[in-house]
Length: 195
Picture 1 (tube, rainbow, N blue to C red):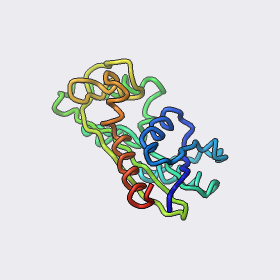
Picture 2: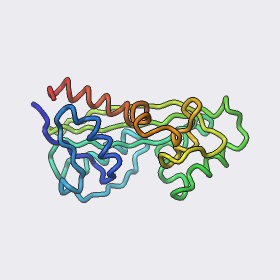
Picture 3: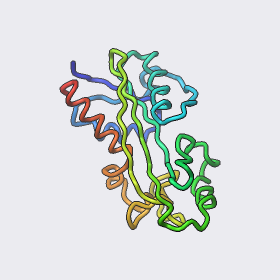
Picture 4: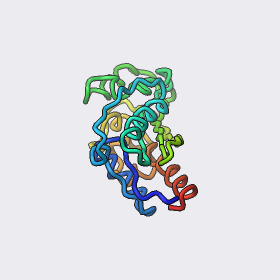
């Protein structure tokens, strides 16, 4: 059965725009949780990206009973044991994420500063069945902030010669962890529902 409408468990306009852009060829209308009448802000107390994505999706699905997607993402730095991970958004005061990360890594050599952005999407269909789709983007943490695009950890996350804050949003939308997870979602919707 074709899906006409999908609720995204967010009110973040940037995320909504990205999802609408990627799913538009399928003819699916993507609306925010607010527009769907789901005024919830569940406690993201999961220990993994999957758990947090599902908590958000389920809270909205329980209200709207329509297909819902929610994502959880973050930065995992190998030499920090995968941290900040699921705590990426709460790792440092807003706007101080890069400074804290650079301070923690200190003079650790580039060869040991490998990192990846991870994203997991929880998709709950109209019957309440859940599927997880994920994406990763590998790079390393630079030694200083570079670039003015992006947000969060983008200025210190190096992808090749450039930081995520130095590449255009179009380019980032092709290689990012979220873009890869959304591509998997696109394929799933296309195959399973014939959208």
